[in-house]
Amino acid sequence: MDKFIIEGGERLKGKVRISGSKNAVLPALAATLLQRGKYSIGNVPRLMDVTTMMQLLDLLGARCVWRDEHTIDIDTTGVENHVAPYELVKKMRASVLALGALIGGLRKATVSYPGGCAIGERPIDLHLKGLSALGCDVAIREGYVDVTAKKLKGARIVFDSVTVGGTENLLMAAVFAKGETLIENAAREPEVVDLARMLKKMGARIEGEGTAVIRILGVGELNPCAWDVIEDRIEAGTFLAACGMTRGSIVLENCVPEHIKAVIDKLTETGMEIHCDGRTIKASMSKRRPLAVDIRTVPYPGFPTDMQAQLMASMTTSKGVSAITETIFENRMMHAAELRRMGADIRVVGNTAIVHGVESISGAKVMATDLRASASLIIAGLAAYGKTEVSRIYHIDRGYERIEEKLKNLGARIERVKDENMGA
Image 1: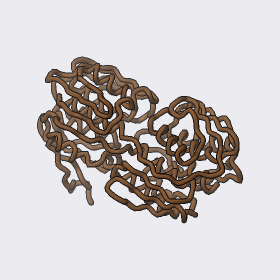
Image 2: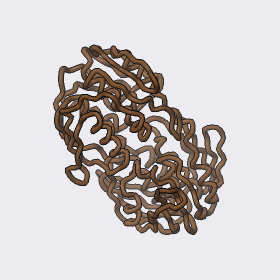
Image 3: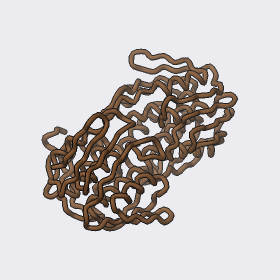
Image 4: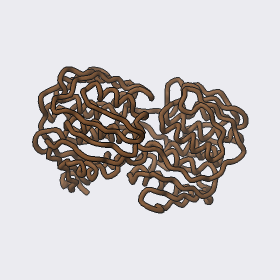
């Protein structure tokens, strides 16, 4: 097992290219199960979660190979298996996206129930209610969700709360449903839009993606396609947060500024100068401490829960007091205790963290608890005085492509080493 050793105090400077979106490529890979044939998915980041999804597709009967550094060729001609086992689903909750794709493609799916995770329970009951509305028989047996459908029929589905995975699963299942399907209170995230556009390229009839109501008219078949996924808005936001905390000056290339408008607006409030030009973002922070800002996570287009930890790290050395409220996941502030080990003044009350900015923080041994918490601890380590050791960085490898290489290119002093205390 690896860890990061970070020598803090260097201002980030230079250019960084943003990778393809993890949260867009996973549903794109799942969508290849809808129609047997040959696909090509491009702009794919090299991540553990991508490898896990490829393993799942292979297990189901597909053939997945890397054509080049960022392109995967998939042949789903031989897909017959409909069982997504516990051994893979426990590694990555996004494996549950196979549910909607298998129902669309095979009319049957048996997927290990994902259960809870470090940041919260995230139940899939809304996914299952939607599938039932489409005409599926749903049962839970011995830890598995067993779904079958003799035929799929259009339906009106109203989500009680916004769910990205639920919207994606039902989009895939509904493309073959006879008649019209309406998904109301649908997720509006760019990754959902990207999936819908891929499905439309395959021949699906979808309207309203990116709004709260998505309309799908069922079709008889689809056509395999080549598709390049969008860039990773959370990676872009993470580098902006790191730039702000280290009081640096960076240029983000290959990104979509409008996808992180809420993040840019908050960072601008802290005193960062941010200029967007096409697919480029230029950001700089003066040598003064950032101003404290309040943050409340909400579904897109509001401030993303996946940026909450990174902004909390930034606020630890801000001027003033910040209130950071998490409304999406009930247990997503475990990084606060680790930041306190570095000298941060943070008090968590319910789902709100009160952050009193301090002049500086210092390096310490800290432990990552989830993917975005990992990013927050790295950001803090970059700005801290002295040496920071971040253990359990396998979390970061799930969602950030070669993050230490990118940070080194910006002048950071960060090294990946073996963590002898954590075993192999």
